[in-house]
Image (cartoon, rainbow, N blue to C red):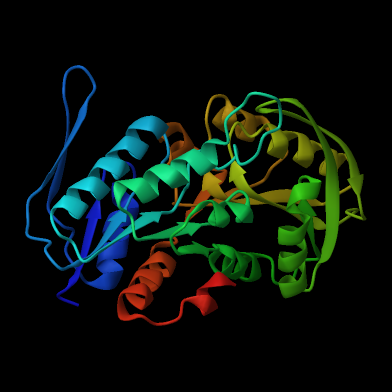
Length: 313
């Protein structure tokens, strides 16, 4: 794979190293500098002419800096005559702003897609988009991988002999929860959630039987953890034996870590699409699974021209 090169910005160096280890490739030489006024400068320190370049960069906190780093790296590789440029974005920032929910607001997820395309990306590899239709915002191929295989393996290993019920924390996540419940041969329940304002949610009722069962709440991301806190309290109030949560993207902003510590959750299982803060790493409730092998396999198959369909389930 001499024509394959892996590069990264500053957003998720640990995940990038794991991906490189899986691929048995060194991380490409690139420097990301910041001027005193905040401008970002990119320097590519090796020849990438006619190479298949993959840039691993989650557009997570600091979101705007991570996004600009990615855009500038894409432009740098385009101007360095790379054969193909693939942006590997394990966490796609601005994905929650995928439609107009009020008058005179932007569709930010679409704007980010346009910027990545204009910068020169030829392909996108991402994971568990908040809304699947975001793939249609791009005019280039998008591989939307799912962390389900990694999370399912964890659940099967730790709750094999338990009476499990899979919980969707809102109606929007029912399809995901039903798919997990089917593969686990478990029951399904739904929390009726009302959101009055962004980052504030209030669980109202639980639809389904959770009494004396191990409840596993599934969501694509945990941001301020308000949904998880309210949902876990509602499920326990309905007689669940214990409650756990599995989320792909551990954004965990603001009061999230404190809310998780004070919540009825016994554990919160997340992946490393977003690097955890020191407070989150120190929490004995939060467990991290790596999606490095999944992403690495997608990179190999994309580079070789093989199908990545089997990685979508």
